[in-house]
Length: 130
Image (cartoon, rainbow, N blue to C red):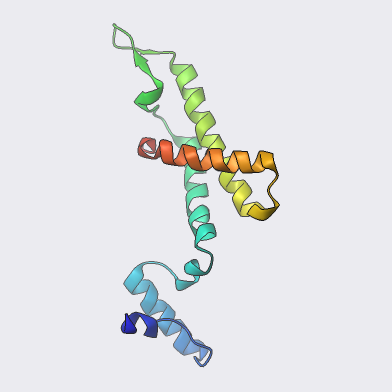
C-alpha cells in the first residue's frame, strides 16, 4: 500500500510532480484519483449518459417483459417496449435529479423517484444489453 500512497498528491508537490503522479495513478488503476473525492457523483455521471443513450438506441425488449405466443410471435410487443422504456426513463430521471440537486434537499417525491431509479437499475441490470 505504501507505493499506492506515493501516487497520491500532497500539498508539497509541484504541478509537474502532481501531473506525473496523476498519470501514474490513472495508468495503474484506470481512473483518476479525483473520482474518489465524490465517488457517488462519479458513478452517477458514468451511468446517466449511457442509460440515456441506451434508451434512445435500444432495439431489444428483455424477455421478462414479453410473452411468446404459440405461433412464436411476441404478444403485446408495443406494451412491453413501453414498459421497458418507462423503466429506463425512470432510471435516467432519477440519476439526473441526483446530479442536479443535493440529496439532503430532495422532497419526499424526489426521494421516491431516486429510490425507484436505483431499484430499477439493480433489478434490471442484467437486461442492459443490445
